[in-house]
Length: 335
Image 1 (cartoon, one colour):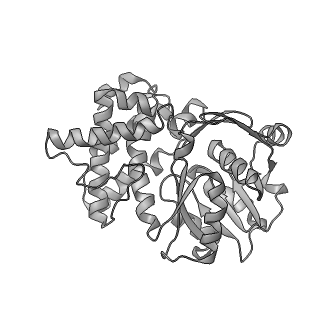
Image 2: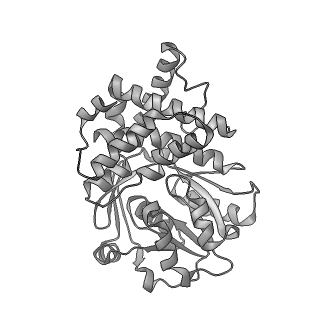
């Protein structure tokens, strides 16, 4: 059984290290040669809410030796297709690609590898990259969780085997409606990651401030309305469920109910910041705003559902990305 983690960023290193420690033949694939050298020499060094140094195997796409049985795809959507094309020589008729990115990337991945090779997934935890081969776990270790599912909802031998593999890295749920999980996570990301990227703050800091917490609630309200219009039944993740019963702006009491759910959610990952904010702080040319809040806004537009607050988040984060604004708390005045 050969497993690859495509994208050795914070989550890729974390998952690859824990799967390796679980006894599987796991290869981390990265493009940064300094990172590859550090991982091979020093191992994956995990800090934060979990402390471990785990020997791992890391290679460049050109040196990856397949075919792999499972490829856990953890690159950002901005480089997702190119990354897959770069390891085409490692994919055969039996290879399964597992989409674990933020957002809803399944159609783009299927266009490259074929829908028959695809299993969808969603990661419910966070980590921050702290240097070559060093990651900080920012979610409580006991809350590590991944949702996976076949696109047709069937429980197949290959997904049961994947469940066994991923169980070495935390909790796993096999879903019969994985796109409900994916869209529920999308709404969650729009709320907590959109605010974190806009304000330059941790999830916990946003939850402690009444205005920022309310902003997350209102973003969730828009997401809940879009999911309802799409006919998607939201899924509860760590107590967060973006349904119109939980998130609506009918009155102040309803909004306070949403605030309470947001505060409980971000307490699990108090010190986590959005991956979009990490990318901005690292000076990368683009982040995933168009694939997160932008994706929800596009879905709303197609359905005739107004998403003015998500639209505003897209504009603010895009301005930050273009160096027209800074990711600072004062951006609350933009909303």
